[in-house]
Image (cartoon, rainbow over all chains, first blue to last red; front, side, top):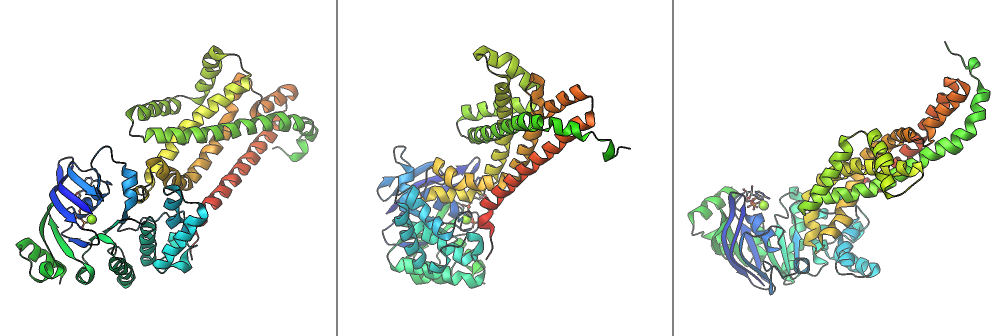
Length: 241
Length: 226
Ligand SMILES: Nc1ncnc2c1ncn2[C@@H]1O[C@H](COP(=O)(O)OP(=O)(O)OP(=O)(O)O)[C@@H](O)[C@H]1O
Ligand SMILES: [Mg+2]
């Protein structure tokens, strides 16, 4: 589903990604962990070209993202992204947030877009908030709308960048529940998250990144239970306290 | 000490029709044209200014620097006596429309640019990640939020434009201020001539403020908290 080969990303002098290779299979749930600044977000953002890779190749669902001839907008429709700070459109209601891309990108008639949007809000448990603006929703609710908004495009892959780390603790559960449900339905997911419980419950694979490369990977049991690499061990000991 | 008793109300009422039908009307027209064309022009210039195409950005920068860096009075004279005559012959008020619109376009461009740049990067990224093109993201996501944010600044600019429109009297366009001067010339009664002019400006300014306040309410509906 996603092939990443020798991915490099440099911001001026700073080399943030220093050769990432990985292959994410259909229906796989991959959890990415690693210290702050290790390049996790950059890696995720390269997958849908929010950051332009300096070198290397990314193929998503058969489309070579790094090829100049690929229609990036078209491929981005297939890759949903959920951000740490939700990034809902504040001037639109929850329903409008979800319906907008269906109308403007998928060119659906308004009525159809809104009915799909309503369906998506129902899926994330927020049918009763359809008419509310983001400013009127809690963080957890906003993040669920954001997930619904990405899902409405029927993406083949969903990318999550620390979807729960900006949330108050009592709201983490509701967002993770939606993500777990998605995983069970067979969505291919790449999740940057330090939510150990989530990784263990639905994660197929954990990648540990440090200083721009993947240091270690394995099943959640392997990486969390018996990390081979010393840096993985010290990182896990820090977040597990 | 001036008392109301000394005011020649008859002069005021005699000249009131001229003041309103010519002066207020002309000033109103100048302002509406300058503000509308200026807003459209400003939006285009701000998008060019932020464009990754160097040429667009440079052209816009030069334009903005020129119109903000030279006095409006000079621009009016230059456009009226130098630029427009090379194209053809137009009524004086056309020079006024052109000069005020081009000038307000430059100021409004800077207002929009600041507004667009103040929108969180995540908004553009969210829009793009949904498959929207850059123009779509600008149109549906960034610009509506930017406009809402800059409405107060835009309102100030509109009011400034209303008042600055008096400068076109220099090319003999009979707007409100010039009408006052005409009355003063005929009657030699400055209080009766300029007093009503000031009040008319005040009324026009208040109408414009109300219009901006109405826009702020319309754009502000997403601010309602539960
Ligand atoms: N647009 C940018 N320009 C310059 N440097 C950047 C940019 N984006 C990220 N960086 C730098 O790249 C490095 C990796 O950033 P990245 O956001 O990918 O890390 P991360 O692993 O997601 O960290 P965190 O856990 O804090 O989110 C950091 O040092 C960051 O400062
Ligand atoms: Mg990050």
